[in-house]
Length: 387
Ligand SMILES: Nc1nc2c(c(=O)[nH]1)N[C@H]1C(S)=C(S)[C@@H](COP(=O)(O)O)O[C@H]1N2
Ligand SMILES: [Mo]
Image 1 (cartoon, rainbow, N blue to C red):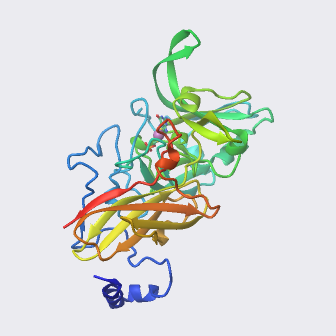
Image 2 (image 1 turned 90 degrees about the horizontal axis):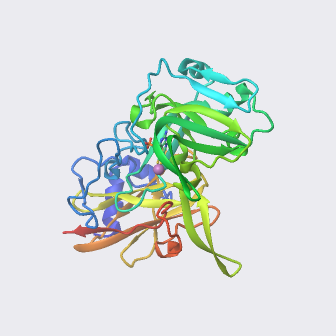
Image 3 (image 1 turned 30 degrees about the vertical axis):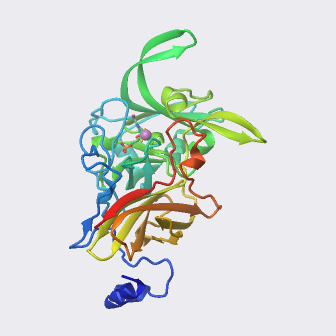
């Protein structure tokens, strides 16, 4: 089957007609599998692979993407301690430290401030092959962090803002040759410049409904364009301080160890996990028996994209189309590609994304000097069997 058949098929629909001649417009618009279509299994995932889509640790089965937003009961969940249960009526967000007016805010206090919506997708920095299921996209409702901090009056000496979750557990903290057992809260921090920018957001709702316990009810931080770990769930306190915050989940657990060539010297560097690295992956391939539809996901820090491409076996890179339903700056972006002329046998498909600064998604080989597994944004080849 060649391009001609596809053209003729396209002409049958007025939707397709409207798109003719406009390069980059998808030939099919909605990511939901159409009636009569089946998902083509990936042969690089064992049939009995555990996608772990239930329970306290949950993946999102990306093969089920059926629109721009991840449904609340399918959004992935991951955390270090058990999900705490917080009564929204008794909930208070404490604002403490280097502020003029320390506060204790109820959910109603926050809802009375000027609320807005934020579309933001994110992945866990540990998200990787084969399932890529620690990723999702949501429409969050709440208050910009800056609104709350401005109301509290941040003092000039405040350099660092620490965000504590209500979840906690016993931890052994090491200092040189000593070890202390302490009751530890999940905590993350943002530097002053980031905290007081217009972007970080305090969300009480996901896709128009109150946050579920899994997603951090009743309130979480969302730092658009940053890896999931920044998005502190069950947020209970914001503390402004002068010193750098060195908590476990800030400086130790979430860091990347990589060798980098700097002026001809190999330097081993350890950096904190912050903004998302440019990434794309194929989420699902479906067929109606003749043509094959490839659906994929792009995640990054909000830098505009130049292109997404798909390569089949040793063929050339071919342009994929960005779906128009995921255009917001911090949304994940869905892309589509129609694969015609698939021959029987096993095939390898891979996607790569390029942004407008010229950054190209790296291959696995390009990342060989990255020793720790977080921030794996490498191109992911996917195998399918065509019968
Ligand atoms: N309070 C709290 N917030 C947390 C975590 C946690 O362990 N405790 N885990 C972080 C990590 S590592 C990720 S990837 C995201 C996951 O968010 P989700 O469960 O809503 O998908 O939450 C972040 N926020
Ligand atoms: Mo994470």
